[in-house]
Length: 111
Length: 250
Image 1 (cartoon, each protein chain N blue to C red):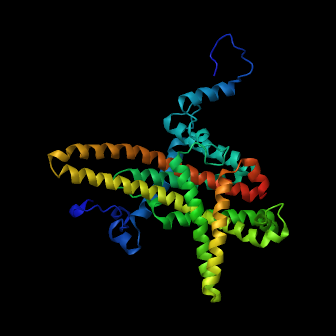
Image 2 (cartoon, chains in turn blue, red):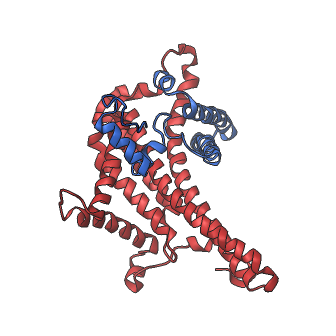
Image 3 (tube, rainbow over the protein chains, first blue to last red):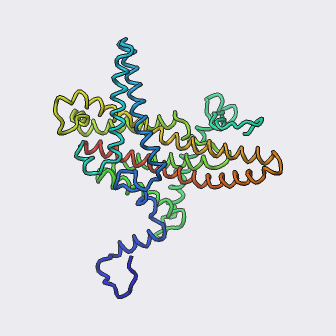
């Protein structure tokens, strides 16, 4: 954001200067702030990050327990499948958190 | 609210029939009423905003255009050029949730996004649509999504269930995030609001803490506005990311 009049005018095109001006006025604030570089977690408070990680881990576990319980109920193998699915759910939760924090290229290649 | 000296923080989430006897006969609650209001507000913003069709937009037209462009950019940047096909869906979703969240900040209004039944229904719809898009675009190849690349075949029986669970956990994480944020904010508002009433009526020496609670509530209202917008945005962005995964698979 150089404002000197003697500056070379070529590099900052009109679009860039407009963007910079809009940014200074806070007109474009919401989209860049919420950062799409790192998925959607950038620029969040520690409280927000903690909440997201907690939700990701617990939700995988909840789904796993629900599926394990349902399959147990279906097949009558009461404690076995739910135990297996709790472990799988924990692993899936860690995978979710890893996806959250993994750098973007790794994430895309890792799929 | 602060009835009989105890704080009833969850009473605000109870459903009541709206629109008198007509609403009662068809089970039309205030939650449904707010959904209709949110839909009408979105429609009103776009219809009334775009009616002048001015070259230099006025305030309302500017708001409508910015809303359109923000969501449009979110779609095309996150999903890619194919994102245009899903723009109407993401736009509807974003503004339904945004107006639902923002309406809830007003006194006496109900926040329909503070019910997990509502957010879970939205999420089931999103995940169902994403899966349908992926199957429609890729056919059977869609199921290769659950097979991580570059992994020895011996580990696949372990990793495929984990991937499937990770996929399904979107249902819970997406819905719980929105619901928990909205509910927690409103519970906090209610608790501090009850503090103001209880401390204010308790005696002269409690006026200072009562004033402090009032100040906290003022800050919380501002914070709620931020959370309301941010959560609607996060919901829409995550929908876009899921759609990106569905369109591009790997």
